[in-house]
Length: 435
Image (cartoon, rainbow, N blue to C red; front, top):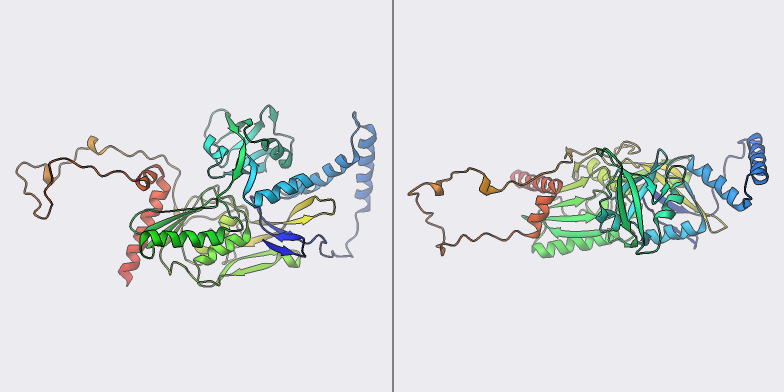
């Protein structure tokens, strides 16, 4: 984490790309007129509610509600974070926190699941990207802020919460009961696929993700006993996280060139990030898998590798979260998270509300493997009196079926991964033919 002014850390959090900034905001245009009439109206409303509301309300609660309403009216990602929420966000960034294990936002007054996080209660219970949560236990979500909804979802590990979910394609709402747990997010997983092709899954961008990616690639090369022939980089259902990590991940695969840049009204929201470390795979083929749950930092990586023509992007159009939130710590221990910039891919594309469109579309389908015994296939070896293969070794007459590996099972279950592997292998063959 980058420390600024000794107190504030430069990190990027949760669903959005968020920067931490100094407590003192930049000087604003002093010539801009203060809206006195609206301020008088605010004070009048505050006094009326404080005096006339049916129940006595603490003035502090009223003012916090006013601040929260001001920010939440701007966009789905701007928010007021009371001291307890601010502390929880710091814990989230470190990769360990309590809850259900999903990234969420607001849509039409309901909680929308951006993505369930790998190996968490939400994912294991069957929560999917795009689900709309309309009830938390017995409490309707409508009318609550995102912060209030998140508070309900968090709780003591081992306790249960029933979610009522509206899902596209389902005739009626679904009810899913989830047991809360301490969420420990491991951002990188890796394994060898076939024919020298490696696989790396990034579930979330954390502070150490860039370094962990380098370690994962070195482990794959060691397992392969030689340099990789290609790579599948899986960013599906990755909701984002630390911007610096997204830049570092992109830099692992690029020799040079622009990775991402941001533009906003204030000077410190205008940033540019260039590749500097060199391509660790030396130009070997890469396929990046994305889907509707790939957001923010995931889209930065996919957009950079796509624009620099370093990888083929496969899957479905990503979420479209292309804005930057700055986190400003306040004197009372709280913070505000406010959108201050949009980010752009190297070619100047804004991802906001558009997403990254894949080079190769892979529809969401369910594939069932047919049993070979059910197919009518007559081959040479089935013909009476066929010649034996002179080079084949003699067997004891027992039909020895090779054991199905874990990789084969994974490829059978995951159609998108199987297609990505095919793409990498085809690209590797084409690369060899050009030499």
